[in-house]
Length: 318
Ligand SMILES: Cc1cc2nc3c(=O)[nH]c(=O)nc-3n(C[C@H](O)[C@H](O)[C@H](O)COP(=O)(O)O)c2cc1C
Image 1 (cartoon, rainbow, N blue to C red):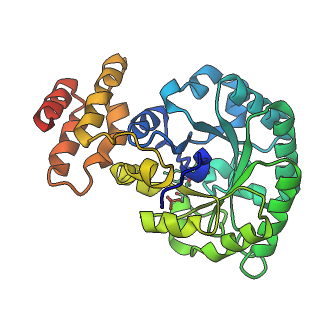
Image 2 (image 1 turned 90 degrees about the horizontal axis):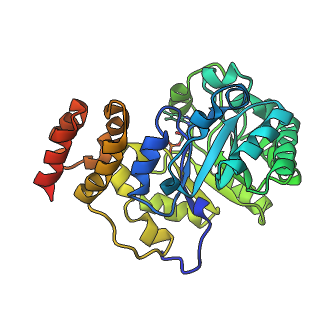
C-alpha cells in the first residue's frame, strides 16, 4: 500500500525502550528509515527537573522526527518537562502511562497512572499549556482486574485525555499487571487488538496508534486499516533492516534504501567522533545482519569494539 499524501510521522513509530533506544540506536535507526517517528527511552521527570538536563535531552539533529518520552506523576513538573522538550527542539512529547516496570512504578508513573486517569488528564493539560508541540500518551488497554476486556476503562481514559487536549494515544494492546516484570507482562497477558480497533471507532477524530508484537509488513497493513498508526518495538531493535522498506511502502518516500554495508560506512564518522568505548554504540547494531550468513562474524566484529576491525569489515562488504 503506497500512501501518496504526506503522512503523520507517527504513522509508523519506533517504540520507547529503556536502555535500547538511546541516541546511538536512534542515529543508527535513522539510516534505515528517514520517516518513522523515533521515541527516546523514557526519561524520568524528576531527573529532568533536578539532574543533568543537557545530558538527558541531548540528541543528534539527524534523529528528527523524534519524540521525547517522559515518565512522571506531578502535573506541574510534567508541564516543565513539556517546555524543556520544546526548548530542545523535540517534535513531540509523550507521557508514559503504560510501562509496568518496577523501576517506573517506584517513581509512581508508567502503568500505575492508569489507576488515576484524571491525573493523566491533568498532566496532559499542564503540558499542553506549556508547549505547542504535540503531547501524546502511551498506555495499555487497562489494568488487570478491569471489567470485561477493559474497554470501559480504556474509553474513559481516552475521553479524559482527549478533553485535556491530548494529540494522540498509543495503545499497547494488552492489559498491564503491576508488580510483575514487563517481560512477564508480555508473556502472560494476551494481546487484544480488537479492543483498540473498537476504541478508534469510538474516537474517529483522535489519532490512535497500536502497539504490541508487530512483526511484519502484513501486520502493519492490517492495523493501518483500523487505526492511524503502528508502533514497533522489539522487531525494530532485533531486526532493524527488516524496516528498510517502510519509507517506500507506507510513507510513499522514494529515496534509495541504503544497503547494510552502506549503513555501516555511514556510521564510521559517528564512531570516529565518539570519545568513549564504541561498543556503547555498536551493541545497538547487533541486529543489522539478522538472518544473514555472516551474522555471527558481524556480531563478533562489533563485540571487539575495535574501529579498525569495523572499517575492515565494511571494506570487505562493499
Ligand atoms: C527493553 C525494553 C524497554 C522498554 N522501555 C519502555 C519505556 O521506556 N517506555 C515505554 O513506554 N515502554 C517501554 N517498553 C515497552 C515498549 O515500548 C513496547 O510497548 C513493548 O515492547 C511492546 O511492543 P513490541 O511487541 O513491538 O516490542 C520497553 C520494552 C522493552 C522490550
